[in-house]
Length: 287
Ligand SMILES: Nc1nc(=O)c2c([nH]1)NC[C@@H]1CN(c3ccc(C(=O)N[C@@H](CCC(=O)O)C(=O)O)cc3)C=[N+]21
Ligand SMILES: [Mg+2]
Image (cartoon, rainbow, N blue to C red; front, top):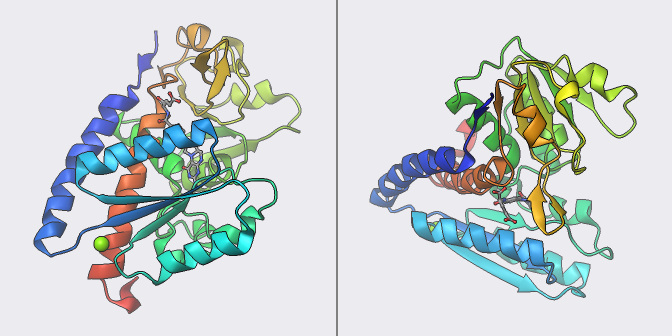
């Protein structure tokens, strides 16, 4: 039986450390502030944004949600982002994805001030993945590392297989594991014989958005399995990994819900604090 890596417990530990750091910042008169821009009324997005607001409040971080209608023009959305860029009280700006079809996501993400880019999605931060040191790693990717570290799972020298290459999860996660000296294989929709790769993984990260994609046969005995999938099946939330069979074979596994998800929100808070610290307490030439 695999060890279950409980995201709520790990997130609570992250929050405890963060609360101390936020108290210390307050002594230096730094009050970190996050702004979330939410376009449209997608139910899942609204629910994620609510959990972000809730955690910010618990930690004493300032958080503001700017709600824009689904038919907002690209230029009006951009104007809202530029207002946040220019507001010195704002440390971190997150544009909740996905955006409506008529909006060019790449263009919008490029509009966020790279020093306030709490998601790490601006091309300047993406470029810095290549040297292993973005200002922040994307929240889910950072959460995966936090889980591995707090589980004392080694990364350097391990074979890590990432299934999925999205901008939000798969691609940055592969870059982070590489920066931590894993041997990384990135699989995706067109990978032939997926199981041949996943079976070699000491660390298997699955972010494909397909329920039941990975089963016990696809996993090496003792592997650390990180399930990033969020799929609704018959009204239930399930990951991309067939938990009931894989839990018998893996060495450690994250459940869905209660695995990576809670860490994603906690790391958004951690990234916000980090950006506040960098922007307010370090000199320009030390960044
Ligand atoms: N700019 C941007 N940055 C993001 O980081 C971002 C985004 N857009 N758009 C959507 C995805 C998805 N995401 C999640 C956040 C929390 C949970 C989470 O808390 N999940 C809970 C359950 C949630 C539920 O019950 O629906 C869990 O897994 O236990 C999941 C997914 C952040 N994302
Ligand atoms: Mg502030």
